[in-house]
Figure 1: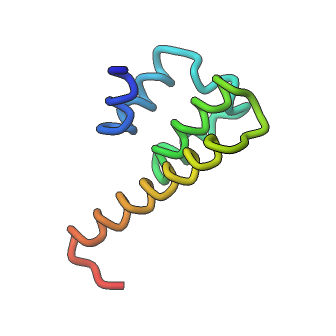
Figure 2: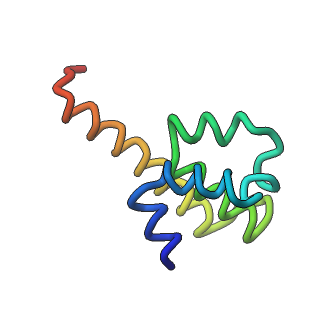
Length: 90
């Protein structure tokens, strides 16, 4: 419960913590560079993908796909919010 809340509030911190102190990303990601790219560009989606792969294995269906899409939208929303706060125009 606390880890889930931390993932929503500070996903990059949770990625560093899980990568540094656990082997959480070893099974879902076979290489180190996908979690690293996810850290910088899509932290919510990286965490959700790792959770789904560890809990349910490959072959997402139903609500798992919806959860992955929601996490991607959260990533895009946080990136858009950061851009709007910085005052940049598209």
